[in-house]
Length: 130
Image (cartoon, rainbow, N blue to C red; front, top):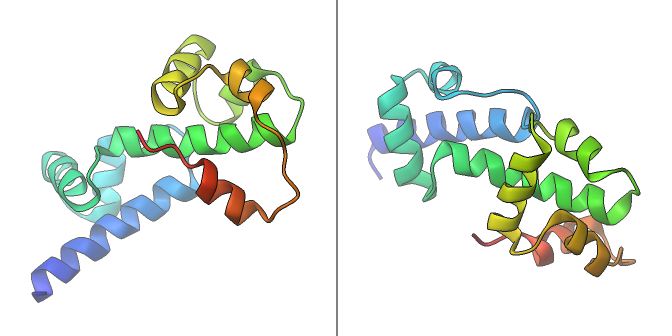
């Protein structure tokens, strides 16, 4: 791998780490591009080429993964969870959740059972694949 490719990968990983840590915050392409020290257009293209999905979709999936955990492990309302993970509309959250997981948040909660296994196994087993 060339030095330029390694540098690009590091920049994209740096931006993805910011998304992982701050998933509940509003993170736009310009903000993430500044973290990666590239232009917004270059960031969007390179992120997709590097990780196989757009930055927006990656952020949505991370938020939905957190919501899945909260739905399994707490009895908080779906609306509270949607606001906590960074969605500004419960309707948008429900639609996005259904697109990624394949069922509504309420149906997921009804079907999901908190298992007595380490969280890392549960996360790997239930990770959305969309």
